[in-house]
Length: 358
Image (cartoon, rainbow, N blue to C red; front, side):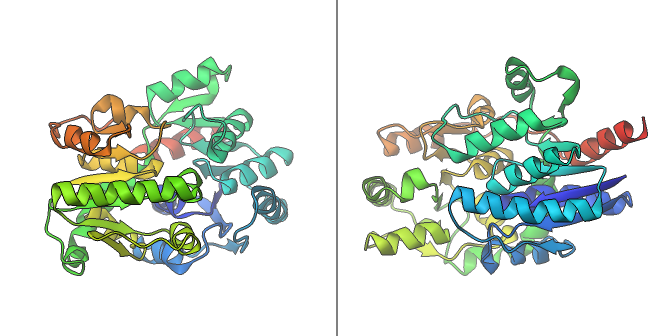
């Protein structure tokens, strides 16, 4: 069995790392195509090094552009590689343009597609990610749903039950595999003059939050209010997109908000694990916070990770961020992790092997 693994962003590298490592352990023939949708070193190559992953066999250097430009460039490059490699199936994870490009190119070549993290829905068609995940789910042959709730969504959309497998989420594999290693990175806190359990961690990069001038300044003002109310540091490892818009709008960062460069995965895992509270608009960080038992407030009106809210570890932002934070800080952190016990990658590869051997 020969597998093509297609990825292009930081979250995909993290979530596919357990699949790559399990493939190595099982001596499965595989190759990696990196679209380079994320193309800065601190959002890309550092994760391969930290996670001790082999370098991708192929790099497309797609970079940034409009959604059509990105997806089109990726499809052209991916198609040529797939025609050359002739894999028995390809694996994609999540909802980025890299995922959609990989799935579409494979479908046209009639190569079976495995979609990891299938069945997530925000029900907000204004989000490009929502379009990507819906389309990818409906052309995939293996839908690896992280939870039973995700499976129900797929069934309601008419996807045959025989294509759907509830496996847990590989993000749980990644967190459990790397948490102990990351403890050696306790200087991540020292370097920022932080104390365990005594800071808020912020990530914010979605276009709806940072590309809109009014929304972005509104969030920065709310972060300042939280600093004034709680009196503890607000750490904000800033995504390149957010920094670009900060400069474009000529915003000044309010006192109490510590802006840093994006952190490597192991450092960031320590920042998450030891935060008092996490504020984020990232889907993956909602999951990681839930797994790590750190309360989270999602800086959005919707989420495709409702299991984090049902578990009790997350809530959507309301009109009063201070009340939201107080509510989450009052929670008992004994909620159950809904994303599995860390063996999703093993389950996924077993399913592919069994189907291949039929």
